[in-house]
Length: 68
Image 1 (cartoon, rainbow, N blue to C red):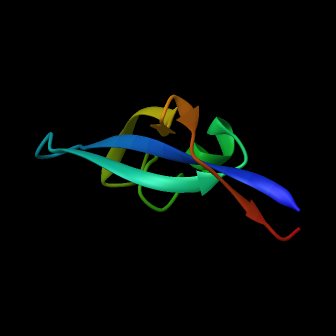
Image 2: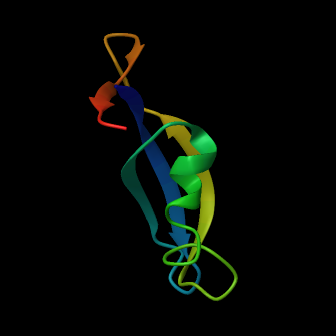
């Protein structure tokens, strides 16, 4: 069994400057950000990336086990 962590990926609309926070399951921070690259964030996309961070609950990163 493999483990994934819950991340918050923050983005900002390029036209309206509205900020959004999306939650993504991934193995690491890079993977969490990459899951949105090309679809929501990127040069030709509506949003710009402003940060990615793990989600904590009771001072521990939220995790889940997933099949490999």
